[in-house]
Image (cartoon, rainbow, N blue to C red):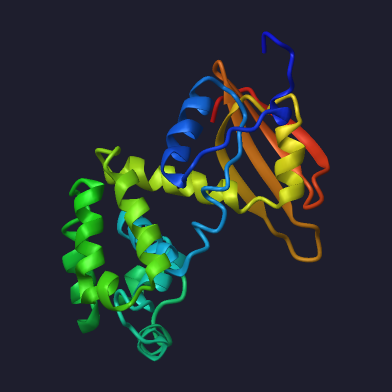
Length: 239
């Protein structure tokens, strides 16, 4: 800031990925916009998606997508046929969890639910060991990513905080490059990203909403997939 060099013209080189997350956290703490190769592809890794889905579903059983992804993965080994049979005759206006919670094959999931109040690192270790998921169902790259996730989890003292952190990072990484670049060069680039939403409507263009906050001010930025800022909404109620 003192020299007047634009942030987008500054690059930090590291010998390995190990220090990148600490650097990113430090830069964000000082409201300095930054991007890293560290998370590119990390949340798209199959093993990470399975574990994150399980964590989200344990925290929020009503999240049908995460619950279904976790149950049908090698972690829980529930088949699509089992889910279909359990839901086909059930009430339609209730969550997936409420439809299947009393099934015999949900007993293992209920045992995992008892662990959801453990520190995140301990819960991850238990999930990794479940059905030998880490040992028997992951590649070398999967294991590297899962190890990184475990290292990061140590910094959180509750599942709620850890899941929120994961959802925030997943949201950031789901944004198209054009939207990322538009945001990073906007006047809100130094603001803290509170949430990212993808709005899909029938016969209408997808819209990405980035909710940012700074000094008790909140703004919702609506972008098209090509990075055009469609609308800016100031949240006067801070909700």
